[in-house]
Structures are given as structure tokens and as C-alpha cells.
Image (cartoon, rainbow, N blue to C red; front, side):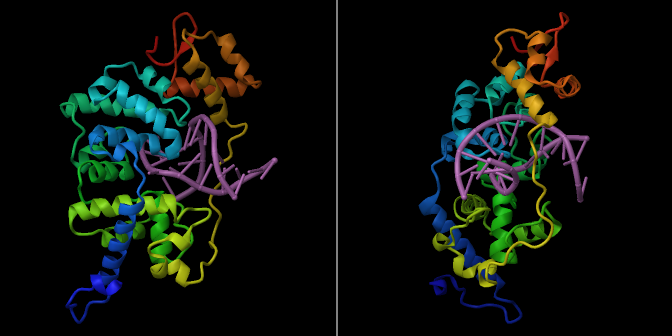
Amino acid sequence: MTATTATTATASTATTTADDHTALHSRVIEWFGKHARDLPWRRPEAGAWGVMVSEFMLQQTPVNRVLPVYEEWLRRWPRPADLAAEAPGEAVRAWGRLGYPRRALRLHSAAAAIAERHGGEVPTDHHQLLALPGVGEYTAAAVASFAYGQRHAVLDTNVRRVFARAVTGTQFPPNATTAAERKLARMLLPEEPATAAGWAAATMELGALLCTARTPECARCPIAELCAWRRAGSPAHEGPPRRSQTYAGTDRQVRGKLLAVLREAVAPVPQSVLDRVWYDPEQRTRALTGLLTDGLAERLPDGRYRLPGAS
DNA sequence: CATGCGTGGCT
DNA sequence: TAGCCAAGCAT
């Protein structure tokens, strides 16, 4: 099995690391070829813009909820300039209930920047991608890798978990991405750009489908025998528990309720209507002020509210 | 580097 | 049932 990927000669001082990596690469990439989901942003016709839209939507939102919204967005705004020409509030409205609606605002801003600074084409350069609003370390690498086939370490929560288990031997990665993780990801990255891009997609998919946080399906995993965490007996996570996100009763929930009213409204909404979404006037005011500050809502001269620039 | 930022399905 | 969790980013 593994012999097929063994190199004929290894420098005497070298460890078996290179061969180990090759074994990991071939197994995971082969598994991906067989089990990858047919997602619309992975099809060639999606283009870089499709990839970018999907990446924004997938930031903290599951694939299944993204799918219908993604389709609608690309039908409606097939190019960055199409989105840029809309009022930002329309992007927020079309975002629907994906959550974290400022992503919609940032995607709209990114589209405007692409239209103005990059001739309407999603930039291919990693540094230029990073400069776009809403594009961080992960998204820049993902777009450069998936859309343009470049060689980048793509470190999302799935990949980090796969590496933590398969290589480091822990159940979960650290809370925040560490320098050690980046270094490991670079070391594991195949030399050939196309292979590196395939590896990035494949490790993400492995984390999403088999090597999941809650109940990993090691029985189906292509690298189960190589997995450091399994070899160590699948030890339980040590250290501080990950900060759990409370939601009920927070400003976030109130913001969500306010924004839901504005999203569904066909005309600007008077204060009295917004007052009904939450019982605590102080928190209500704080939430609404926050939305205004963030540019997710605007107050008209007559005192009514609406999504920014929306009709 | 910890925190704030939505929403809903799953165990 | 009540957390836990989901392809992060900006500050």
C-alpha cells in the first residue's frame, strides 16, 4: 500500500517525514476524489467571484444553509460590479438569515473595491485579496487556492482539527491559530501548486465530513492508521474548555430581531415597530445604535429606519 | 489575544 | 434539553 508512494532514495540524514507526507497527501487526495461533495462553488463555472461569495457565506455558517442563498446571489449578481451597483442594504436583505450580516456589508464593499481597483476581476494576488474588506488570512488563502490554483496554506477550522489529530495527536486544535500550526501547514503543503490546492480542499472536506468535532468517523477515514491522535488512544481534550457562545438575552439577539424586521419590511419602519421586538428599552437602544454605527441600518430624516440605501 | 458579532440544526 | 458547533473577521 504505502510502498507504492515510497521514493527510491532518501538522503541518509533525512527522516521519514517526506515519505509520511506523501502518504498523507495521496490518501487524502484520493479519498477526496471519491467522496467530495458536488458543491456549486467547486464547479468551474463558479469562477473566482463564485468562490469568493461562497467563502464569505461559509464564514461560520454551515454549507446546507448557504446553498440556496449562494444560488440566488450569483444569479442576481453574477459579477462583482453587479453587486457593487446595488445599495448595500440590498445585500443585507438578500443575505437573509445566514447570520453575521456584516459579512454581507463587507462583501458588498469588497465588490466595490474589486470594481474600482481591480477592473472588476477578483484579484489573484494574495496580498491584494487580504486588503479587501472581510477577507482575512483564511479567505485570502482559500480564494487564491481554490479559484486560482495557487499554493497557500489554507487553515480553517476543519484543517486545523485534521492536523491537530492526524499530526499533533490532540483531539482539538488550540483556541486561536498559532504560529506552530501555520508552520506545520506550510511543511505539509505539497510543492506543486495544483497538488497543494487539491490538498487544501481535500483536508477541509475530510474535516467537514469525517474528522468532525463531535463524532469523528474514524472507521471511514483514509488516514486512520496514520493518525497520531488515534495511535495515542484518542485521548480526551486537555486544557481550558473552549469559550461557549451564549446568545439568549444578548445584544446580538436583539440586533438580530431588529434587523429581521428591517429585512422583511417593504417600507421604512417607524420606531414604534422596532420597539416591539424587545422589552428592555435600554438594550433595545443599544442594539439599534450598534446597527446604525455598523452601517447595517440607517435612520431617515423623518425618524423611520431602513436597511442602508434600500428602498 | 480576547471579545463581539446571528442563526439554526443536531445530539 | 441545553449546549455545542458551523469554510472567520475586525478591533
